[in-house]
Structure formats: C-alpha cells, structure tokens
Image (tube, rainbow, N blue to C red; front, side, top):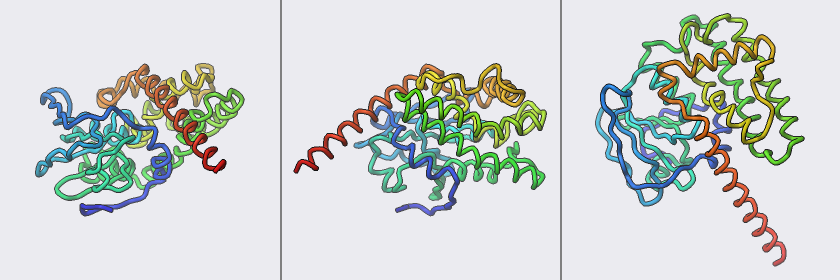
Length: 299
C-alpha cells in the first residue's frame, strides 16, 4: 500500500533487495536528527535509525528526502548519486529489522532506499538513481550516446549475479568446500565487468570520473575485503589476477579516493563487525525456527 503518489519502476535487483533486506538492521532509536554544516556535505540533516515507537520526521516543502539505512549497499547506491551530483537532501534512516509502523504505512514492503519530495514517493536503488539523473542532469552520470548508455545499463543489471554470489558465500561461511566453489563462481561472474573496464582503457567505466555504472557496482566492491575476511576465503580480487582483474583493483583504489565516493565509504572494520553480528542473529533465528518446527511435528 502506498499513501503517496507513486512513480513506480521495477529493477532487476528488486528480488535481491527483498531477499537481503532482513540482513539490514540497526539500533532502534527515537527521532534524533543531526544537522550538518553547509561546508561539509550535501546532507542537510540525518536521523538515527528509527524503529517501533518512533514518529515520521516532519516533512519540509521542497526538500528531497532519502529513506536509507547506513549499512545497506542498495541505499548506498542512491547516496552515491546524491553525493556525485551534490544534491541537497535530508536522510531518514530506517531500522530494517524492526521497522516503524509509519514507514510500513508509507511503503508496505518496508525496503530502502526510497526518495520522497512534496507528496511524490519512489523506491528501489536503480529507479531512484535514474530519477536523480533525470531531475539533475548535470553532471551527467550516463553516457550521452545511446549505445554506450545501453551498455552501461546492461552491466549494471548483469551485476546482480555478482551480488547474489557474495550473499551465497555469506550464508555458507561455515562450509569451506562451498565457499571455495562460490569463490570460483564469483571469479567467473566478475570477469565480464573486469574485462569491459580493461577494454575501455579509462580510469573509470565512465571515463575520467565515476559515472552511474561505477557508482552502482561500488557498494559491493567496497565490501569485498569484509566478505573475504568473514567467509575466510581467498581474495576475491587477487593481486596476481589477470590484466582485467588488475584493472578492476586499480579502479577500486581510485574510487576510494574520489571526493564524492569517499563521503559514502564505511570503514572495513565496520563492515566486518556488521556481517559477523548479523550472521550470529541469523543463525540464532534458524535454530529457533528449527526448534519450533520440531515441536510442532511432535504435536
């Protein structure tokens, strides 16, 4: 159910966003809003993660609002676009494990990211990112030439196979043989993207600066070291990889140093702690469900 006018679109990552949403939660708090100085970022204000018992922060006419969660890679996509374009906005963080009733009444699936402004509401990472590209065409993040633009969109959508493999590794982190199998699968799935970067021969996929393709794949590349550590796997982008993999490693270093990307980067230790903490919670939930099923079968 949507209580606002909805501009709706369906991205290829939609199913993955739904499948992974229960991984993404944070400490529940009341409406606490932090304001930023004008010289720091394009974020006007940002709440703590709001959960049950909270109220929706008052909306301000003409102010763009991003519904987000700090550790969510899908929400990071939209944050990156907002940063790249220096679009003033406010951030309302939502606790995705125990969601507030007001957000579920606004958007029943309860997922992030979503954008809202003056009664208009749009969810999903790819949809919100392309909306921002249309509303704020400068600086452009998609190529002007239609065939190049289509190619970038193809690689964005096909990156879903890489995302899926990473989460499969996460859910099998106690199975070394499965991790090794998925490591090989990841190498296979990442190869077309790495080869495309090497073929283009530019620092970024877009050229001399990050564009939409760069920003849409970055959140998971940022987390590769964390997945490697938590899953106890071999490096996912090995230093002794082929020319294409080495090009992707060089690209990752440049992305980290980019002014607009660095605003949205989370430290490695935070990613590791987050993955470990939530894996413990998932295992506990699985045990509870198994015990419940056992008791019900005995009845």
